[in-house]
Amino acid sequence: MAVPASADLWVPEELPLDVSLGGGLGFALDSTGTPGFSFRSTAGTSGLYYGYQSGGSWTSELIEAGSQTGTGSSLVYDGLTSHIIYGSGSTDLQLNYVTGGPGSWSTPTTIADTEYPRNNDLGLDADGNPAAAWVDGGTGIVGYAYHDGTEWKTAENVASDPRDLSGVALLLPDSAEEAGLFYSDESGGWQGIPTYMQRDSGGNWTADSGAGLSGFEDVAWMSGTLNGDGNPAMAYMDMFTGDLVYAVWDGAAWSTETVEDLPAPSGLPDRNYVDIATDDWGNVHLLYYNPDADQVEYRYRHSGGGWADSLTIHEQANASWMRLSIDDSQKPWFSYYSDVDGEGSVYYGQGTAVPEPATTALFALGLLSAIGLKRRTSNTSSRGQS
Image (cartoon, rainbow, N blue to C red; front, side, top):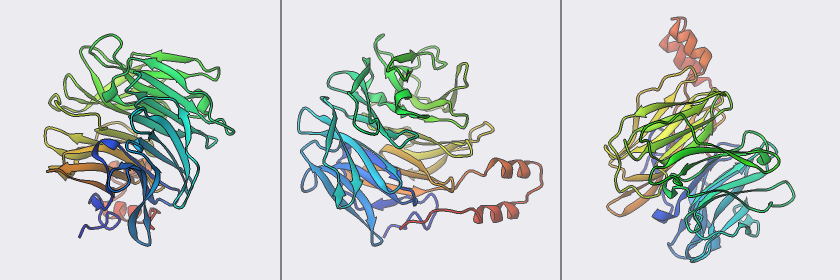
């Protein structure tokens, strides 16, 4: 029997969810700290499913049926209410949106006429309005759409020639009318250039292709966040060098840091091998797959600068669909799909919060002992699982 992740930190729990390997995986925490999943399944009736805890056990519920429905799903919560976007259909896939919860889902709404929206990212702006970004593998465009509180506005073509492997990362610092997104631009040839697109309130998109890069860096599998200063930041794997890279805008220029020096990957498909999140103290968290060691790893960058050593979460994992979420006690929750010998499963768990800056400063000055640090950590409020 798997040990519940709520009982042992950094111990992944295997979940009884029948997830289609290539369908993607949405993961988020609601306002009580309870995790939920969105995914495509072909076990039984094919379609979009929602996985959740009920009565102390995990179960799943069909939201919309269809042979390819549920592809590329992305999940966020507004309080206890789920919001999900996903590909819907059998061949030509539309991008659909639903909201609600177990037993009470809205009628699916088509927010974009797409062909293959495999890479999708959903967010909520400061007013709680949903916004969506995607890479359409069929038409070769980066798309964006948002809800203005009354209706979904007409979908916009943000850019052409994206690298499918890169996915897309949506950032919503305030209003959905002034969104930002990362994607990898292949319009110049084989090399994927990380590009940050910014939308103004008039609906105009402006590109910044700099991102502090030079040489032959070639970006895939990216994810994005707002750092502790509210500036855009991203993590990605470099197809040319294999490096895991962190790039951040400081308000004037882009800078990059190599987080881990990995061999150049080969044969990794389009399945999100890195995810990034920022906690309320400005610490940056990374969950990623190390293809050389075949393991899931975690690192964090302290708000004061510098990367901690990597922590191995799962060895011999053959893992993909990395997902991170931070709860109110600043603990990172992680999830991923592991497929070993054709026996694929979803895993999830929770880690430990990075010490808050004041605690770290006291420890560095010798004013807080290890015992005192343990006491401070144990008194930090945390969310339990239902």
